[in-house]
Length: 368
Ligand code: SF4
Ligand code: SF4
Image (cartoon, rainbow, N blue to C red; front, side, top):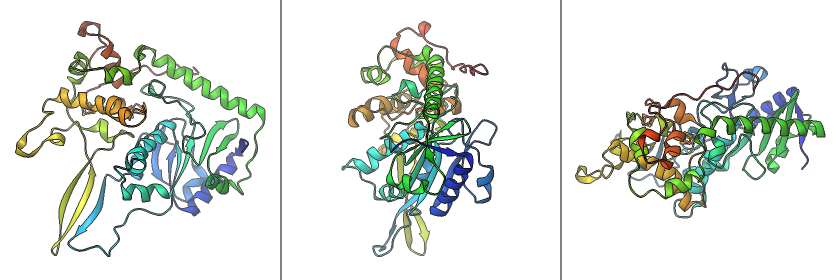
């Protein structure tokens, strides 16, 4: 299908159609440069602003709820457990968030060993509209982990939008996307509009390369982490300010560890709950008899990197379970920058390492 052009009025039309189609969530750009994930309302469509950057929050709570009931007992075999609305649209997410959903798909939907029926049902009804990043946060590093500030055909979106001139260039990813675009006034895009998209993509990619040059390594992060055998000094150096708050895993669009526990629901009934968990917490790997193979924070810290850049890519065709969104960098109580930890796997002496805690990467100069 050719690229299409959608005007700003056409966008409102598309949002109205999505609102009527199912439950609509969006990343709203009208929060002083910090786009927020929110449930859409009909009234807010008129003043909705597309985000220039990824949302502050990841969208993972929409595909893996922080807490969900997965069973009731005794005897509920004839009773359905509520899963999720049949149709849910997520509008305006960045490539790093779509890549996060793909990370979950590989584990809970496509890996025959671990199919999660709750995830599969929720995923079936999901309609995804991605949008190119028009800017990058100083913490963004998608370019270092096989990502980019825009999506390509085949990445899994229903529609992808690029902000151009007075509207949007639209790439249709699925028949469902094509269907929802009908009646919005979308028309064939001109060559100059397509050139505008290429220019924007090149600009943001160049910004990412520039701000991340100090963290770039000759070998990929996956190669570096996979080669580690002993606990490297970088994990002790950068992990020394970790206070075990678990923020990094909670905000991560690629973290999916969970716990299961049973709750007394009263009247002789019990419910089994699945909740987000964090490998950074001491209790995560505690076993019967209070044994814990990862008692020290540095061990847990190292485990998180091993999982993202060694275990996961080893199992899933070389893909990391980090999308480079930078949320863990923005939210770490210990000011730990994941890029610095990974870069410092290339040096042995602490004197040659980047400082800990990590200084903030500077904001790009205005207009650059
Ligand atoms: S590890 Fe950090 S940068 Fe990577 S996806 Fe998770 S929150 Fe984003
Ligand atoms: S956010 Fe930072 S301080 Fe908190 S657990 Fe993660 S690495 Fe440790």
